[in-house]
Length: 103
Image 1: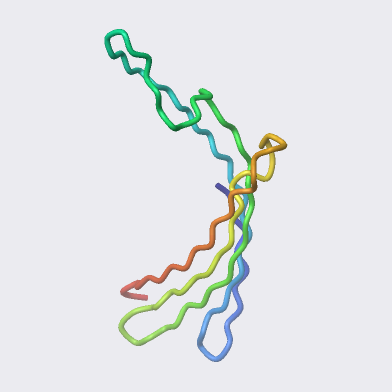
Image 2 (image 1 turned 180 degrees about the vertical axis):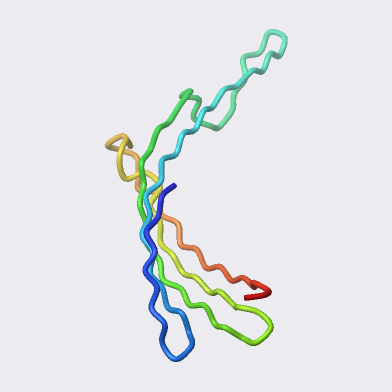
C-alpha cells in the first residue's frame, strides 16, 4: 500500500486528505479429504486473485494538551483493476479514531 497525504493547519487543527493505491494478493486452497465424499463448500476455489485498488479519505487531528485525537473517514475500492467482467467492485467505507500521547 502506498499513500499521499496533504496536511493543512487551520486554527490549531490539522486537516488532511489522503489518496492511496493498494495491491491485494489472495490465495485460496482447500485441502479437505473426507472418505468417499467430495467436499461441497460455498466458496470460490480459484487458487489466486490479484487486484489493484485505490481510495481516498479525509481526517482531522485535534491537538489537546495531553494527547492528539485523530478522526479519519475513507472510501476504498479494492478491485478496480484485475477483476472479471461479472465481478462487482468491492467498496469499503471506513471511519476510524485514535489517540496519540505526547508531542
